Image (tube, rainbow, N blue to C red; front, side):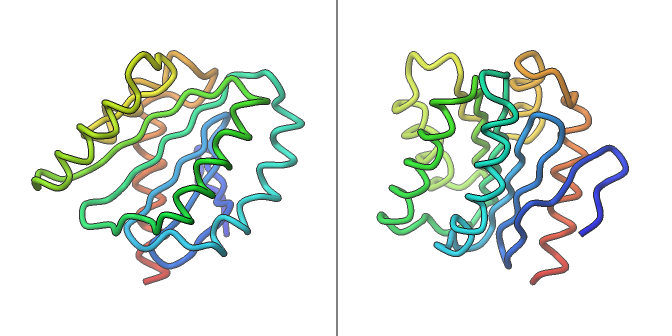
Length: 162
């Protein structure tokens, strides 16, 4: 898969789920099921980057599109363990974007915010722009504007896998 002109490189693409690397930020857009194969395919990419980026500021911009199903509890636990293992070696700042105006999206944002109290390295956001702006001062690159462009690119990639 070709890189975006600005430097975003797709790492894993599956129907409904994509993750890209852009500078020192990982961008995930999910509108479908989180699968075990997605997490399994992600692991080798992160192992090499954890070594190369040890103790450097790294961002995660995770976009949950409106209507995306919640992961099964076992996969949610695997995902949590995966992020925790990354956090041990990286100065990780995370922006979780839960899109939508529905009651369920609002409740999910509220629940995630409550679980993230006193975590200056993590923010729950309602828009891509808010999440990108939160990450910008924490990572050397890319800019918030470039991250918004990267999310648009990730969404186009998802359209090709539908």
